[in-house]
Length: 328
Image (cartoon, rainbow, N blue to C red; front, top):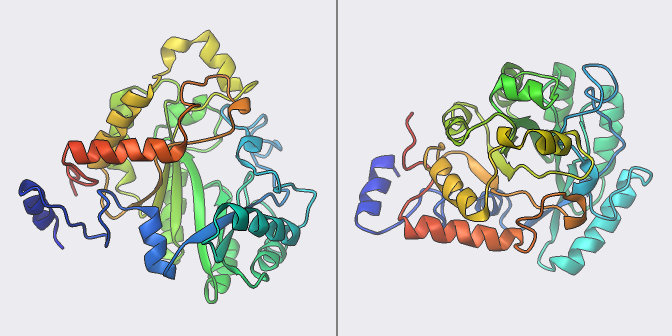
């Protein structure tokens, strides 16, 4: 279906998407339904990785916004083997999501390509050895990739689903430097392009509300992100973790931060995805962590599914959709 045909349908108040469902955005759930025929649940894994921005290779202290503990479920501990975490993770999700029959091993904590390739091979193979695991998703940094790792992943990809998920966070080098990211945006762009050329799908993670970025700057990110050969994206609002460097910076320079309310964020995200390429799958619109980790708690009472409903309602009320204002 052409973009012009979508516009024509919208003009007549009829909405039929090229994505295969009735969503007004390219949804992650539908992407996986088309890939695997049903629900696929991620099992988070902490395999004991670190980060070149922590061990002194490119920096120390990590990114100013970082707290990996906030994202790890209770079963996800580095002292456990990968196999044990998968067994416990499947048991955990069977209780929570009874429809889940297929699982992906999600190497989530820190930079999960930041080891010698033979160690990576052992860890990844341990994950896919479970009979109900159909693939792996690997969270990492753009500056932690090389051809050896890509060759390993292409080998695994012959039998299993493989996706790389890159923390990009911002397209602005000034911002990346300020949050102590340890790489520039060009590094991210080159790594994503090389990964795409190798045939491995990849996702990108972006944060809205980082210091020094205005609403207009964040909106302009949609045009830049749309030029990247990404399969998926995750969007998060900035969350201030207790004791983090960015929390201290916020206390000292609050005027440097664009702070969203739920209402203003929904308005922003709708305008943002109108400009975003309709080919990019949106995995998340909002970040969600346990309240005890946060120093700012304006969104605590609303879970992700509620905010998602509000975003979908706003899209419907405005009669708009992802890519409406996308310019190739």
